[in-house]
Amino acid sequence: MCKENLIVLILIISIVSSVTYTIPDYPFSSWEPADEQNYSKSNRENDYEIRWIIIHVAQGSFQATVSWFKNPKSRVSAHFVISKDGSKIVQMVKIKDVAWHAGNLQYNRHSIGIEIEGYVNETIWPDSLYDKLSKLLIWLANQYNISLKHIDGIAPPNPNEDSGIIGHSQVPDPNNPSLGGGRSHHTDPGPLFNWSKLMKYIDKNREWLNNISEADKLKISLVTTYGKTVFKVSCFYNGEKNPYSLFRIHVDDKIVGILGCNEDGIRIFSLDLKSGEYEIYVSNSRTKSNILKISIKNKEKILYFSLAAVGLIALSIIYYIFKIKKKSN
Image (cartoon, rainbow, N blue to C red; front, side, top):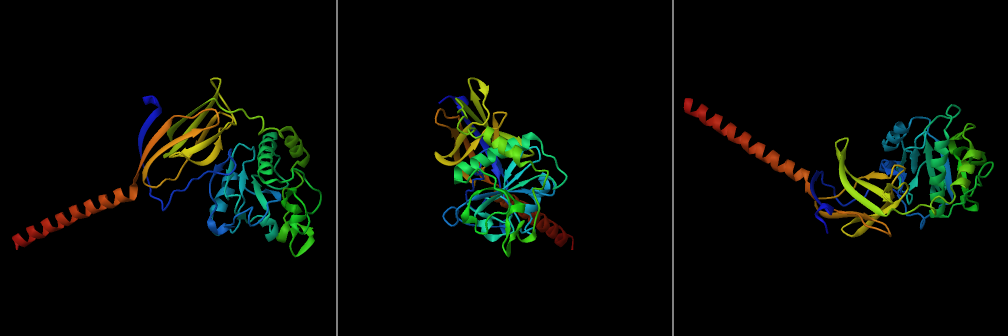
């Protein structure tokens, strides 16, 4: 292997109790976990079959919604949050787990919740939102065998009776299934959300995943952004940046997840790794990237020894001062 393909770097990060790979389920989203008090851990689809995708409007900004789901006092969450223009998609709850979003326990168990940045009766979403949302819906439908249809009216009282894409306003009240919007009778996504446009984008992008070309060259490197060291993958095809190209992430030859380069042919992600030595690279069926050899040291251990050294110096100074005072007396 060429020397240029072997990068040796030392990262200093905080120790974690175990190796945790922060890889989202949807390969073109990022991962920011909701607080564990805001959803139920589960093992879908073994525990519950996923049959619905429920569209919500956040009644707030993208970042405020993400922050709210991270707040343990909120007691609510959704699997995904999307910015108003569709440029940012964050996954906050693993699809195997049950997010709290529908106001109906059974629909929570059998659905995937998506929050869109904006306000009911106020926000006009651009075409870019419907384009990116449709691609997410197509991927989810393909993965979990969900029907790509939008039903009319309130969904059936029993979520197992049908499958499709609905708004929060179509979730039946568990106490009175003739009323929609779940227990609190929400009205989102509201009359300004264009279901017809969304379905047209779904039809337009239906073959989107099947038509993605694999990169013929992959490159991985480490970059520092906002003071944090992260991984950067570049995808190329015939010498040009290749958008929407999937790749596997390998940690010591173990595949830990699948991500994809975005429209600019670049993907940035992080891995939470405990202290140790690692070889990290990415691959697809056509090619393999260079290898990063990484040594991660325990920051807490370094801090402990630093504090111990400071303590010894302080004790030495105190002892020295004590001796001088004793001599002067």
